[in-house]
Length: 212
Image (cartoon, rainbow, N blue to C red):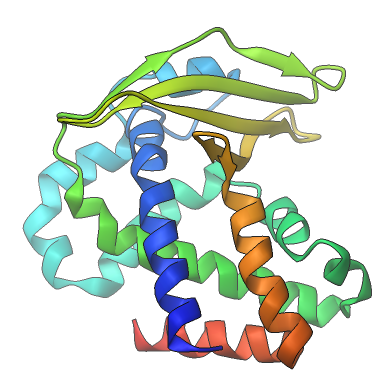
């Protein structure tokens, strides 16, 4: 994959992760299956506590930073579904080991990119919540919000959740101003897959992750 594709992916990921950070700063990993809107509205998250208490150490210890991000963020995201949606039709033709490798590589990409962006959180950002919407026989849910960053107009941000068999709600997509994270990555990666194959994409993601 070209450096241009990687740069675009990282820049896109940081933009998407700004509202995701706001979401997770207000939603600790739940002991019970809370609805998404209650999850978002929870105060004092594990992540903000750790960031506040250990900021200096996290800024100098990359391994510890990655571990904290994985521990506090990964449980909130349905990575298997995200991987399926991003690969689209290529998921169906992919071998099981390719699916597993891609899901792992993409998860690492998000963790690494999120870790570099997390220190940009200032506390001045705000979320205005709108009524929670249930869809698909209450298996899917959408939390519509407006995100207000300092000095900017409100940006509509919709968080899409699915209810797993356990009853837990997990996020599988975010739409910012009508643009989907999943579809944006699908469009980027489809070009690479069609030109060089899925293995090439996975290997390129793995190399990028290894450098971070």
